[in-house]
Length: 318
Image (cartoon, rainbow, N blue to C red; front, top):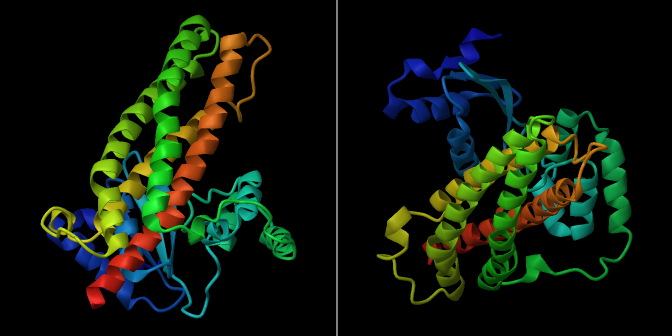
């Protein structure tokens, strides 16, 4: 490892950590890497770097705790503009389904380029690119034109469709997981972990949706109207819409990681031979919930949030 491009963040004063990392990143030449060492997950840095420097870098965990988090941050070549998973999914729902079929996360992992995401999964990116190009040769067919919707309409759609679904499904999931864990937990201890993960998802999502509905979405609607924008009530509360968006994206990632852990524990929702009807229903609802959440997060991370950022930037120029 090149020690000149390695930084132990724990040795820096808290107020100097991010400025120092940004300064070291800015000094990198294209394709050079800065490796940072930290005593906790530096995920907030990822979102700040993305917001202030754009999608011009690669972020790779070399170690993920419990003592050290080591991340390699590589500056990409400026003339390289590979599409991200989020951009591909936002452009055509059939592409989103293709990515999902191949295990490529276009919601929480939507800011990764197709090539990087394929490399991480050991997937032939040329094959995926060929299948995506075939989609382009065929008409789009019938699908919701999410990209064409105004942000205020899209925000209402998310609340009325996906927030409503989450609020209805989570109590059912909690009840089912408790029942199945109580009956089968001794033979299948992973069910006890799943029960706790569902509790955590419930806590995260209930708080998350309230913040969106009470703070972020009203501001997005005000931006859409571009009038009656009460800066005291909204703008000064969080400075720029980028700040609550960063928080929402981090919370999306936490819930996404919980669901991925559940998928791993259940071996992709594979039922044991002894599974009763409640056991079967639990796995079916979990898989349905995961699918809905992927779409939910995709609509926010890859469509609504970029629209809100673009509107705020345009308003600041006026």
